[in-house]
Length: 335
Image (tube, rainbow, N blue to C red; front, side):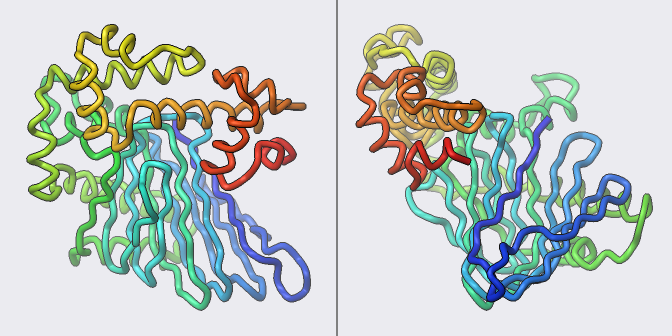
């Protein structure tokens, strides 16, 4: 089961109070968070369908810059993320992207990162935010809707194999998409009627978002199709091995031997599929694991966190942690 955690970072208002979600109403599994502060006013509605599709509906105005963090606390990989942005543009930041991605207005944006990761959406002051964010465990979603693995369409197999791990696909709103998003944002129903209406819209929007898979640029398609399925399978085996043995100090040569590829093929194919080098991938996994330890442990020790994930040099660990998360380990541990 995938759970999306919402965390808002923004300045305090003129009264010195923290603009937190100050009113929450639960109605048949639909949570409506109402915010009314000098800097931020509006609603965030969230719910989960019976097949674990998470939906967040945004409808608010903001008067100062702020960041909306969406985390994946259960560590699920290959999370299907569809962002329907109906108002002003914003920036999407994710560790798999080399730089923030522009989320344009009146467009659908789709991404399926190949690792457990978190997203940050940055909004500028004096903007109107209206839209929907749909997230689900893509592998589970596919398995629930196809009886036989052999019947899964190729674009979905490609997505599961990491072809779109570092790609943010976008598509102009169709009339159908626009109407569904509008109806969801401005839904005035209550109780079970509202729940069923929103769930129906969510599933239809999920279907429309999934249909965009495979519609990538010709350059990307040509680059990816040059990797045969056997090599792709072994590259993903290497990624899985790194994720399961992140604390071990195995060499790239040893890893290549384990999956049955020469180092050159593994390194070049890994970069094409996962968007980063083997070393950077391993570093990201280690740092994510260390962050999880620091957050979940009652009295965490930074040196223990470094040692648990395979760092022999605590100073180097602290330096890389700060670069990755823009915070020192002690800052994370103190929360």
